[in-house]
Length: 206
Image (cartoon, rainbow, N blue to C red; front, side, top):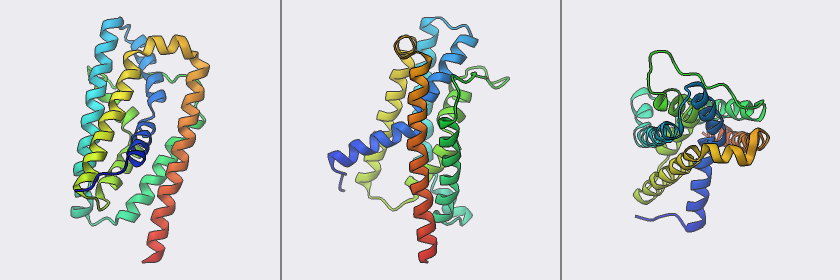
């Protein structure tokens, strides 16, 4: 059971953290908290519930998403291209984002920590597709444990941002949040392009 090196593991944490688009989710969280008129304690509790929901969702998708390939007969590279395209669109949306989006709770869902904050704002189609591809790719036990720990760290980083949302908003202001969101979008576009290229290359090589 071999674990990835320190540099590779840190890179994995950074990649998964950016995949969760924390600053975009942060913007939605603030908007929704204002819309719901949540006080400080209620806002922090919502941040904690959202963190748990994101972590559980990502873990389930990563470890069990590969069943899609086993039972539906979908090629991993075909799915890689599809997931990459969806992720690419998500990244473009982030780059083109204008200001803080309005947080909208789905009618009848009650607690917004799962829907819409965890799904689909944080764990959207692009993130789901990427996690499924990562889980379906041949990996040893050490690598799977490393990814699971990286998912936990990425989720906790998001949780810290949401927990201190009001403080961060006062420091960064809307312009700073917008810049970080666009930079995240640029990374997502680059990651999506790499995923699509890998899928196309592997299909051509068959």
